[in-house]
Every structure is written in structure tokens, then in C-alpha cells.
Length: 76
Image (tube, one colour):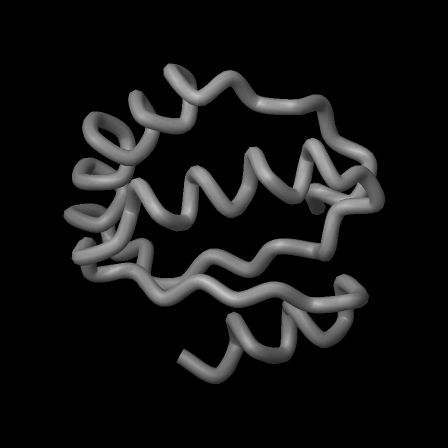
């Protein structure tokens, strides 16, 4: 839930995209659901993360509430 999260530094988003995501994908992660952030700066941070993961075997989507996000994840 990124709605009220802290802003993530670009270097941290890059690390997750290049190091952690491949491991998580290997372990079966296929979808990431984000709850729309309240902050424009946080929105930029999440957008940066999504751009860095382009081309990986992940599908990411924004939702306006947790229930919708959980339902989407359960579809897989």
C-alpha cells in the first residue's frame, strides 16, 4: 500500500528492480499492485520503480483501494 508510504530514493528503486525483482520473479512473483499514492512526489517514486522494471516478467497496476488490488492479484 503506497498510499501514505515514504518517498523511495531512485537508487533504492533501481536496486529493487535490478537485484530483488529477479529473485522474487524466480520465486514466483508475477504481479505487483500499488494503491495510488496521496503524494505527487510519492507517485513519481512509484512511477520510477515501474519504469525500472519494464521488461521484467511482472505485471504492475494501480488501484484506488486494497480490496480491488487483492482481487486483481488473486486472478493470477
